[in-house]
Image (cartoon, rainbow, N blue to C red):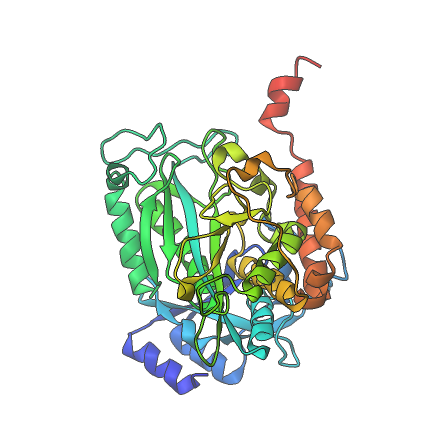
Length: 450
């Protein structure tokens, strides 16, 4: 871990005036505080950078669960400790500004168990204890939309450089990408300054829908990058007079946005991919890993589809999974095995939406595979042809998903009782808030007819 002196040298070298202290909450929303650089360094030395622990149980609506065991009225502070490997320069500020991820410690200086970064670390430690190193590569989709200050009105694609909005599907369209060339260039520039390891950015199937692919790497580093990328994209979009949204299903007649997670495991000492044999075949460990995903992913869906909107995406006509069948290069399956060399053997989890918390989504998919290996599970036969012809095994709503998750023993054992209890309380509070809203559909079809 870098010393305070090294942090101070970095800050002085880059002429930093302010530091954004970032803390991702349960929904992946960045919270924290902005402090002058000198005060930041003083706070790190003296361990006086603190924040209310309740930020980890804030709902997406900004409220708190009505459960004192999860949200104690005393609301003790946590100590914020910077992860020095994450300090980066931010773009778009008049005052030279850096940002850094902060890790929360209790008053006893123990890692806070419910913090998403710590949840992911715990799962990665399971692999470390086996002499393995998990590797992930996320693919993140998002939409650009016209500015829409009225939440009762549907979203619409923005005007492009031609002065016209997109109206149809343009998968991989180069001219479609060029419609937003200036905005995309700024995204690349801001991302490069923040040292985000982006591979490619393409136009996806939806109108003004884009996808970014990240290069494979360490799960915690990639979760940080995904979280920061979302913030950068939203900032750049606003500067160009449009919105960028990572909602799973922002428009009813358009496809949803996913965060597909490619994953593999390598032997830490040799660097060899344990998913393939020396002859290039799928290894027994790989098959057990896939079996773990098949068995446990449906029970842990709230960590991949955390919002009521998330389940609107998971419909076959929009190329989203409805089950956890697996197949080679088969995008109708929830689990796709891309064509690859033995060293790149991997499985792609296609369940997570773009709205998922990257830390929790990575932790959960890696945990499911780990349990599969630990218990030597056997996968179901691979699917050829459409997996949509087979039964739906994933929950249809967040209500059903939370109920299944509440009975998932591996989640409680490995992710921790405190985390599972807090996460469920947050989702139940959000569902209560959602139930209190009368939708435009109800007013349209029920107001004068029933």
